[in-house]
Length: 205
Length: 205
DNA sequence: ACCTGAACACCGTTCAAGT
DNA sequence: ACCTGAACACCGTTCAAGT
Image (cartoon, rainbow over all chains, first blue to last red; front, side, top):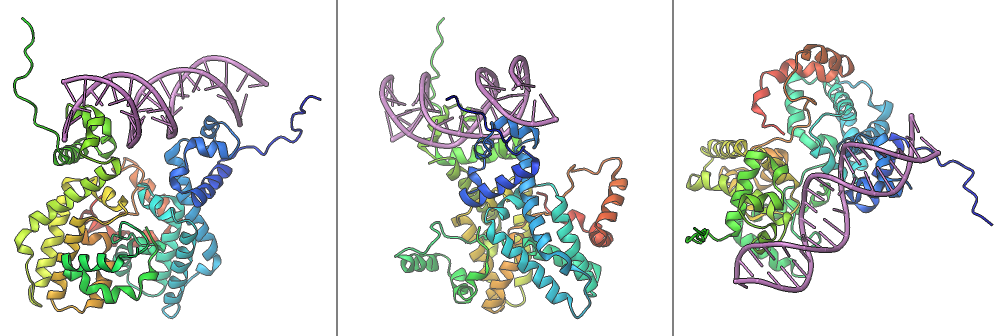
């Protein structure tokens, strides 16, 4: 018997399907695995087919960043309405925690988002809503502006960690390492007792 | 006449020479031009020779980041001594302005520094000195710790800009674009008058 | 010890051709 | 319109060989 061609035509490729597959692949196998070729294979398609739905790799990354922030926007949803001087603190806090939670599900997103140099609509929408909530709270415009700068990436729920040891998890001789670091960098070492208690509040990178 | 071989042996390759060439190349031709092959050609050497002085591309980037921060440390130099409650503000300000100035000479550095995930000694030294100056000023440890977090990359003299239009320079129809943005994102637009006056205080990216 | 040439296993992307 | 195969012009890196 000869093989029958599959009667059901496979679901057609779409920019949206491509982006969704890219996000899923980054979640599961890391951002480095997201190559045009891998992504195509994952979609059972030739690499070059992707170019009919996405202009190129750069646009793919832009789209992935946008998809994640859109996920945040969707989660905050209609609860992101107007604020008053009484309610803005909770509203902003809720928003940023939502962002943080979404980022935790896409650990590659902070890196990708901050590597994109051009603004994207979802991020714009996010910051616009956040700004609206701050202004609604009665904060003067210049304070809001400087506040957003001061918040930096924390406004999107993540922190760019400058401090990070070479080996992620503390090894068996962590104490000895600590002692060496303390000797070389006494001032930073003096901060350690303070730093430990909220070590779990930062989102890695 | 037959060509005589150059009697002077060329200056031997060195990790330091490799890093210096990489920094110079990134300054002049952008970080994207810094490939192992380009770098080797620049040094009149075969690409594979680099691997005798640098373990790989990742280490090269680490080294470049370290070189730039070391340049900052060297510039601040001995003026980075002890502070008192009276002097710490000026000292910290001077330090950060020095960092900023060095970064302006290496526009690729912020991107590279924040893309490196492991700590490097020069950055550590920088933060240790900064921490020392803050503690010397009499600030309590927990405030210093949170302050460093709040400062984020600004402590190193640069800001990760989230806002940036697709086309760097404002084009001829910038006003029309502005109007469209304002309509879509009214809250951010409300910040514009505040934002303009210090537009030149941010270090691009 | 240091440098080289060739090769390997990848990239993103273009092009001409298929359906 | 959408997808394909082959090819182009690159990457970083390994290896065996030269000096």
